[in-house]
Image (cartoon, rainbow, N blue to C red; front, side):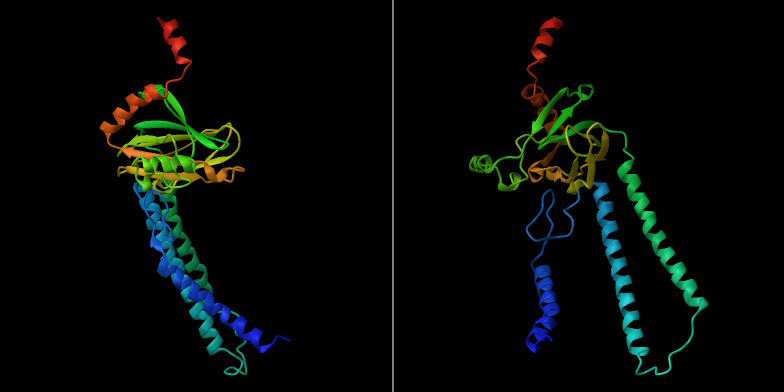
Length: 293
């Protein structure tokens, strides 16, 4: 038999849990845009139409499931109070009620339809890629990303993107780079650069094991599968630096292959593109140029 002390301690656990939850919610911060915030609550800030839809749909579903939960709780409380043994020494023998059976069949169907319609709309937004202004190929490796800008879109180069080590981060901050641009475990040596307000199609694959390409503020997440080419898209409506991570458990250094996408104006993108062609030029391009002459 449990002692009274243990009973009291067990009874206090729900109270302590509720208190901890309340304190956690009180200390929670609204999520930042482009990267997570300490003790954040909710999604990261949105900069695309798709992520706007995801956030709206999520918030609406949260209201709906809260209402359903409270309704079921109210029914349980009513049944406990109204139909307990003390108040009903002779219980009813009613086994069927046409009205109730019709209601509890039709109402859930209507709820599912109300959820399904925006779900299909969201799937269409995510899966049907508009005419792309720019295509980038992202390849997941163990454990880093590489990116390729196609030659037919004024690119013709590729580069690798690795996470910055702590000493490299400190050097960057000491050199005057804002700490928000080199967050730990998210900053990389070579960022993806795209123009603002342009449709960017991202073709995603992997060179070894399963990975996943995900950037929360864009509302995108797609598997990177060896031997298969998947794709997603985004249209960033605001300039800035946006971080993501591999979202598929891919091995020992899964936590150390971040994604960094810098959204810039068209003028800055054109300047970066010209610089990148020289910076990321492959060594084996030189013999080809000589042979062409």
